Image 1: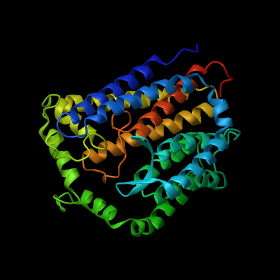
Image 2: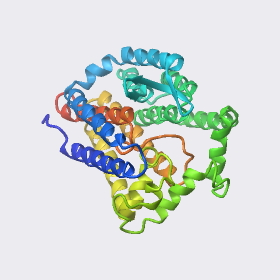
Image 3: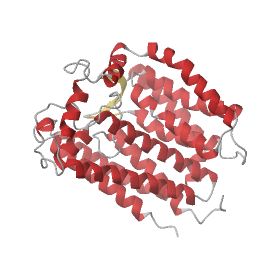
Image 4: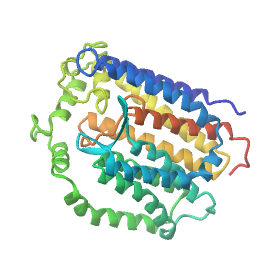
Length: 359
């Protein structure tokens, strides 16, 4: 009754191995050869952390959520003031030859904090007076990460909030208020964006706009995917990826590399694996023994699904390039470990599905 979820473990392992294969291919002629060994090291660290969180009691973790949340925010402030700036974003901390982004780990803190706030909530639907404190909890790290210059990571906190609110349920008038805020806030948000961010959005709407400049990555990514054929060009044989036409092929656009080299069949298999993983997570949420477990799992599912949809959208030129990695596939230690911890928490809920009174 308390065993690990073999299906979730299998899907996680397969995706991680596909990511390693993609990063290995990216390093054959283009990306830094050390990326493969580093990603392997991050996966090893995540594999060590995974059983710790999977075997832990998620209810105990949610009880400590507020402490974790505020410690995380303090770290985000410290990174904002003293962090290392890379690619225009001051969101990195460095230790020796390795670096990390605390803003990635903050996703776990947000999931646990929101879950803790609603842990004792009754069966009634959420109203505005209930949602506002939840929104404030989400906006604090959101604003800190935006100030660090990493809008992409900051945006990923929002689906966590919406996913947990959706599973609890909210009154219809809240939807009208959210819609009004979105409509009225859109012009303000537009002018708050930096010039290059506005240009990326415009280039997404008009694919012919500046194909050698701001739209270069998106256009080259589309060429890589479009030229893949049914079976692809073979591992390490992708023209666009191996000759450096697609920048950041090992991280944000690794789906372009994998599709070019593994074909439309390979690209479809990857999407199918993600779909099965999200559905499995939602199944665990349905079987959760209490509302705490249900909300925690919903937050993880929302975060994972958002990452996949936006990253694939970036690769297909449907979404501006905003630096959101593909879970377990893209190069990056912070993101990889964060998702492994998040999936381990889902396992924790799964293992205790018969230990607590049912919802």
